Image 1 (tube, one colour):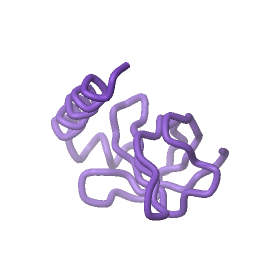
Image 2 (spheres, helix red, strand yellow):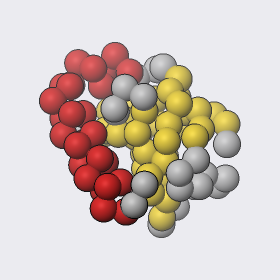
Image 3 (cartoon, one colour):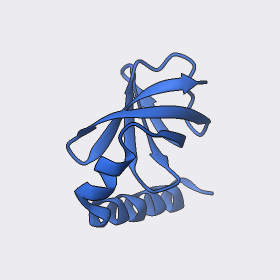
Image 4 (cartoon, helix red, strand yellow):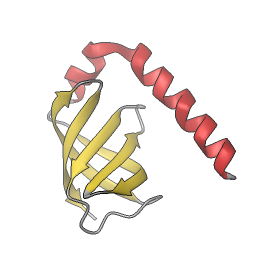
Length: 88
């Protein structure tokens, strides 16, 4: 997939996430999610769950862009989930 297509699809997913609403985010807290990472920089990793929730993890040890990992959603932070990395 070329960069332009990846950016476009990522933007589409972000729009879908916003439409899913706060209830969906609240239900996701406390659960384990598989995440595809789309950015890792400045000791913060950003990715998307299979349910189109945006997630962030502080500290990027072992996380690589394009990789898949398991996280536990700890809280809602704005329009995304703040998570803890379970396995990398």
